Image (cartoon, rainbow, N blue to C red; front, side, top):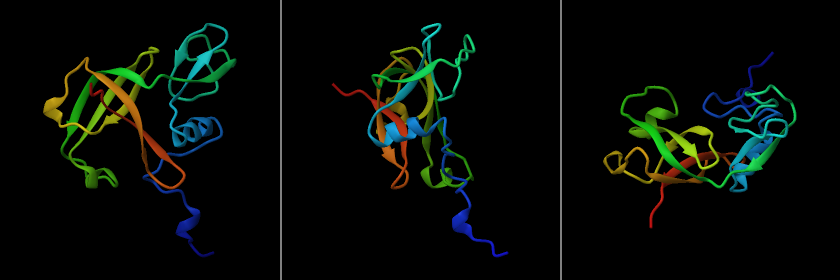
Length: 142
């Protein structure tokens, strides 16, 4: 049987599954989704079909404000893995959303020396492919 590379998922792209498809569709439309539990009323992120706090399966997607604060970050200068090597240096970060959950992401649109833990950041969406947009953050400019 012939090995057709087009039939294989690209290792440098997120795997979109049924549970995460609404998240990726919303990102493509310019919205950041988090999950809200109808039983315990807590919100969480990343997309999954159950609440990590009470284990309820009564979870719904809700749109987050897209605003948060820079919780922590690191500037990555060495990464030999594709596609990260082409993006060096880049800023890997954890952002605490206004709604509470922390999101692993990248900070773009700022030099590392301009960043400060606790600074205000906002979401934006960078196209990865025609079908997928990455959820990234940038400092809020006044």
